[in-house]
Length: 510
Image 1 (cartoon, rainbow, N blue to C red):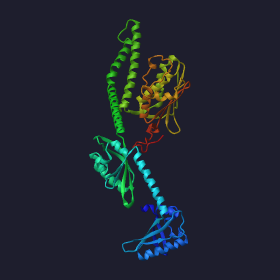
Image 2 (tube, one colour; image 1 turned 135 degrees about the horizontal axis):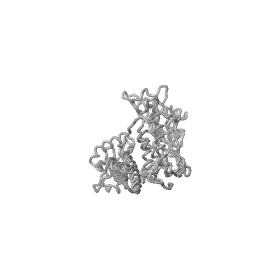
Image 3 (cartoon, helix red, strand yellow; image 1 turned 90 degrees about the vertical axis):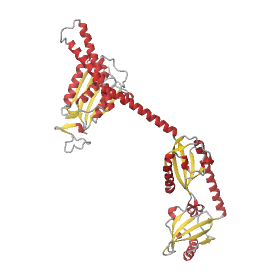
């Protein structure tokens, strides 16, 4: 009730000053002032002279007698609210001294009835919102006893109102969570802050519901405190999350098993193929005598070519499986970039000589050596050049360039002037087994592939701390840009500093 009446707390000070310490909402409305315009001010700065005289006289009587006094028949008071009196109550300390004055106003009958109607309308509105809400709501007192519950809560959890009201709310919580719920309720209602979390509740049929709750403290007159809590049933959502987690775990397990199997099959798959390749080479060279019919030699050539192609495919699959299984490790050594790039270019150029495709090399002679896995770096260059050849028509041009950029990053670019790739297909090409269509006519087995070349190359480059980027335009060609961080470079036989290495102190940074 006091919140519906103007109330001020005033501190008497020396020199007849009565400073306002607190003014409630109704007092601010009464004086038609903002809080910062009243709090901290002498009351004489808020009232006119005649009103100030009336108040100061009553203050003096209250202080001297240390008893409650009233002031009525107030003269001119700013503001539209009519107040016909104030009760002035002294606030005493332990030594019976007046340390403050507590003023409580009283409205006239007309304003009181208006406020009552406004209060009744607000209560009706809140009651309607409480009942029509689609989320369950319960109100508990400071001891945790349910005093009110809405229809949505009754419908969702199956209990009747009579079964819920006057019951300790922890009876609705699973046994393992009751103590925590009781402690949290006490904390929430004492601290008075909004809180939220998850809890398990029991439905009337005995089933358990996963619930998301939000609690807020409601403080009424006479220091009565209640906790208003909303509940949202998230049982289905939790079940779906659990199903998705299980499905992901199963898929991950199957993927790990597949990768582990293929990684372990390296010896079993490669050994027989190496034997086929070796024996076919010996027979083609007629090491132990002539074969007889020329057709045998022709067939052996096909056997040898097919075996080499199959070995390349198996190697790609096994490398990708090792990467997925986390079993492919870098075997680092000093790599001479000029020699490595030159050797790969010469090897690939010999393969496409008959088709008229030109592979040009533009590599700076000042390239430093690199700390890297020689086999993987070689495989990356072979994969990318193979793709460039695949996408280039006969007579096309391919360029391999390498340089140190101004930011001290090694950049290697393999560029062709082939058919190019549409931008929306680039990401697909970087996925395992992802292949783009509309390629030039394949000339032999070496032009075919598994769709692992690009993703393998990207993974191998990233293992070195580098990046692989594809820039392409249909009809204009494709450029694959590789970059490697400066700490991979070796200057004057000293590796450049690795920012992640604790042993890089004193090394020269390129």
